[in-house]
Image (cartoon, rainbow, N blue to C red; front, side):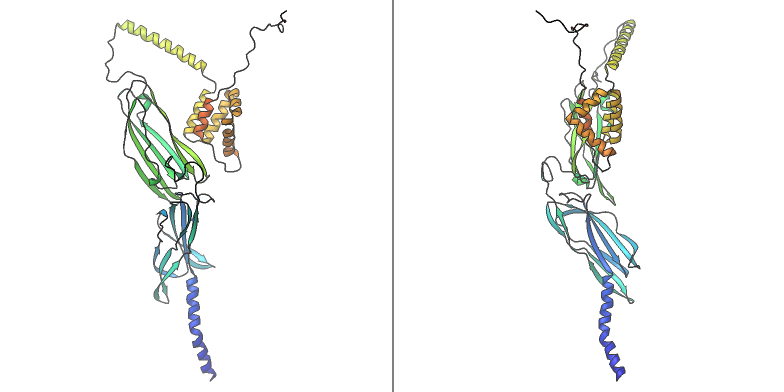
Length: 415
């Protein structure tokens, strides 16, 4: 009788034991989704947000398929292939899964990412069965832009990026062009943290006296584990239309630094086209006597040498350092700018004093020192703009004594 009673108790507890084993196995299958941005602040529209989808599975998996929810309020791109690796749960061996998706919110507000579903075919007791593992819904708050410009403004182009560089290449150099000779200008803009379709359209390159013919823009997106890197290449055929130098003005490209949370400005630099030479197709004038030509050439050489010497004597002591500063600013080399500043201050202390006294430059010089030597990660100022403003500042002229004052003291009062 006791034996039958024990058997009945075991049979009654069997479903509960089986259910507990299944629940424990299901608890070992976890899927999470987290959102990452370049900073701790809420992202703005069209700013990159990384979704990290991670799974940990303590089971033998035969087949798997991750189903992504529809993302109606986001643009998105997957960053590379899925990654499987070995891990552990409470000291027991398990398998890890990871996928990274970059999403770009299309507007401001609060949005919810629906669950990702990982369909797993697991081997259980020699048999296969299908298990669906779901992540929790993920809310994402997208901030509205405050201030001028921004995502909804038609101008300037909204460009949120982690980093941005501009390169400008001419073939041949524009200063060597003569009337009617062509050159190819190639400008490349590269930005990290966005896709190529988010880069601005080709800028307008038009100046009176210069003929420009624009080619098609070439766009490319390169996928990296940290996010997409976008590149666009603009090309123009440039031809001087007048026999004198013409300046192509600089073109500013404003962009939002998603790491420092500040607006910055890149620049397509200004260039001088043409060298005031006679047209290439014009025939040279007939030459006169060879002795007369030789005399004229020697006289021109002597005049040029004298003028060059005069210009060298009149050049400010800090001029070479200022040229080095401008080159470093175009390369966005903050340390090179600081080295050139130190050289300019050494050569011309009065100019350095004028920089520190000018309110337009003093604060940015302090910001540059803080970015290079401060303990915190302070952002560097706009180096190109700083170089332009430094070049405009002139040292104060020293006080000139009255040339008519007597040498032996003040003049006697008139009666």
